[in-house]
Image (cartoon, rainbow, N blue to C red; front, side):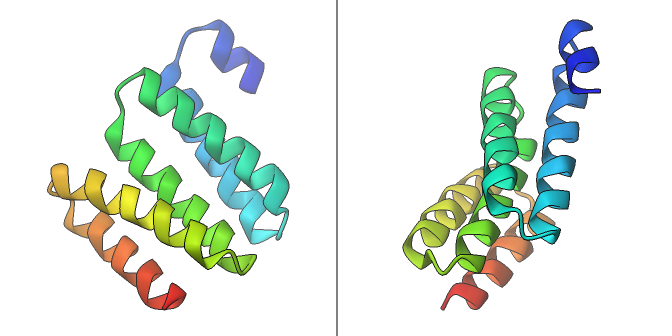
Length: 105
């Protein structure tokens, strides 16, 4: 699926796919693979100017860092996501970030 999405130039679908796979890896505690997929999702989202997906990816990266007791890194990801979601006026996204911040504290 990944190769097919790359070959047909569907960056939004590719980003969604990467984030979905990253989330699945997080749920299975496969942090290394999750971070790889989520970081690649960040790259695609930045390249295609998709701040919504970028905010989602950074929130999920924060969750991965938190689950590995990397609290300072989790805070950095959450702060970046908070800034993006504030600019987008995204109340649901902000709620996710605040929830993540409470879990890190």
